[in-house]
Image (cartoon, rainbow, N blue to C red; front, side, top):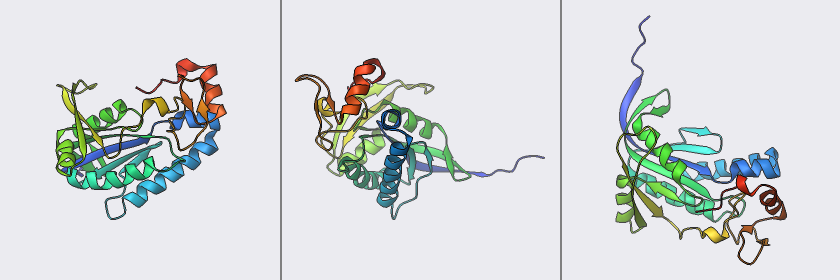
Length: 220
């Protein structure tokens, strides 16, 4: 039988958002703790998207979101990411956004626009939101701080991509990000391992880092 045409061409702003320290939290604190944090994150995503489209899908701790245009994405994510930043039980988030043509099929999105958004999210540091030009222009028009990061080459993407950082809140200070779980001070105060050493949210994170420092990359 010949397959029937079951997809629609559209234009969308696609966002990928995840928890920077989720895998380490599961490893250090256990799966039950990690799932509790994930459920909190899921509820915050759903609350922030009230009145917008629900998440397209979840991929582990990563939410894939879609909006009709950049302006709407900026409004929704401004609410979500600032709420996540102020929640002491969550590690820092990472996010990547891109706008362009997509294919809508069976409730999912496909195409180069989606792939680029995912690649950009993977480049983000804890607490960082990276985006392409259309989203950056929408953010700047709303008075949000935008930094031009130049162009980057992305895997399996032809041509360099202009990249921008969008700051809804001041960037997380790398000196105060736990290298293990990516929690940010002062929300879960513990101490520095040494006057100039990394900051840890708990003795368990410090012990995990001490045993295997090569496993946990320090924030850039």
